[in-house]
Image 1: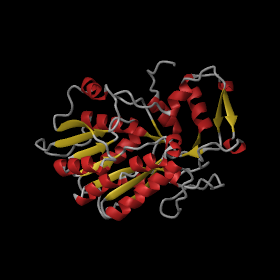
Image 2: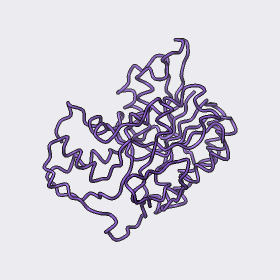
Image 3: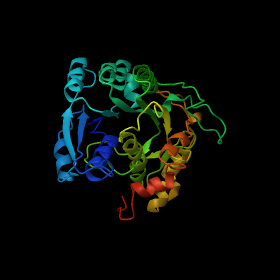
Image 4: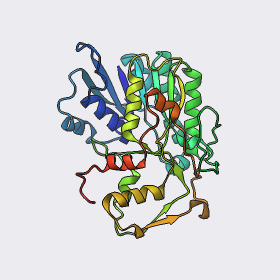
Length: 333
């Protein structure tokens, strides 16, 4: 039994679609083995449930999916749900991920991003947890282009409310389930549009909409952007029985192999669609007045530890991510 929170979000939809349509869960298993997926969502997406059925009318026969709306901040509801359904593992992807909205309402941000009662209920039932954290837990003060944040040696230093709530979630899970929780400090996740619709598009899609429009892009705010397909592969790995254990529990950086700025992303999209690059304007965030939401500049990460678990040297770089987001048959925006 697999619970997926945030199932209607960008990443949640890609994970759900992969589990329903591929053999990722069922390869190597007896055909009598069944997988029950509880796709949990908290929003009010009217078409989410109907779109799932339309897009995947005939899922893998070994996989059954139940779509359920659940408020993770309601102690009574989450305790009842966990007690009634008893999942084996939870992929905790739900979040209030807008730093601006978190900054505006820190209590709501903490309640959603660190749903203590939900995490306690899972711990009480000894449910394995794989939870999505963020690269923004790091300070962002490294100055050398050769330096990357490493989860085993670099301390956290959140500079905004969003990152602070994620640090709280990490600490809560480390206290509650030190031997069967995996925490993934994810960079910006990029890839094709969400398969069931209604979720946000990625920054690459924004760049593709700016043909002929002069737009400023920061070249000193850097991340290790990661392909949604790589994130799905990571989650598929940990869902397999025995892959969340005392030996594998803990914190992992999850980012691609390239240090990438917003300017780099815009140039890559312009190259993909043969846009005139004169409209891609380089700007330095460090030269701008401070905004309402503090943000770290360079939080590029070394994700070797996680990649090696999947038998890889590294995750995809920007060029591969752009080509995956906009495959050869993609129409010019």
